[in-house]
Length: 205
Image 1 (spheres, rainbow, N blue to C red):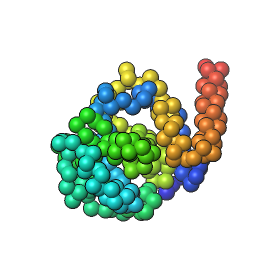
Image 2: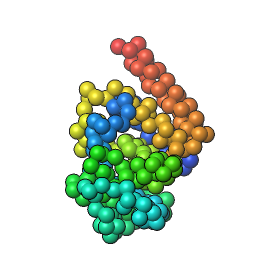
Image 3: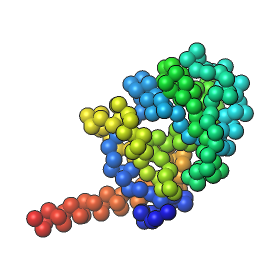
Image 4: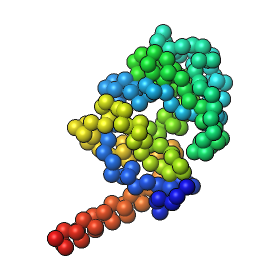
């Protein structure tokens, strides 16, 4: 890929836009009913296999708005170098939403794990965990194409925070504590550089 960013953490280029792009204070499915999952999501092939390995448990956790036929859960795998296995598998859309989204807007994969006292993201695809972040062409950046389709998160009046501030847990999960600390340091340096540029511009006016 063409090198667009200077900072690399854990093999990922870091797009500094994640520090400044405005976003809602926190995700709340009571407000949006899991709107980010309406169009289906992508799983790594390994995640796809992991999900199917517990399909009976998932079926029990589903409600009547979801299809309980595993053959209707996924699209055909396709090559994608941004996924660990090199293969991405999209989830199907059923009743106008991802097959794993229940009628209350909750992810069945996460709900099942919590109800069974497992780590909440044990079965949830990384693509879903990271939103509104995404790994694209080797860079950690914002999923602006997906965000453009949102009816709540992309409204200026609702954007009272930044993507970085509302995804700290997700970033720790992705990068590990050491990687996250490095990211925080980079954020401080980047924001300081922006401030210095603004001061210089003001002085030259």
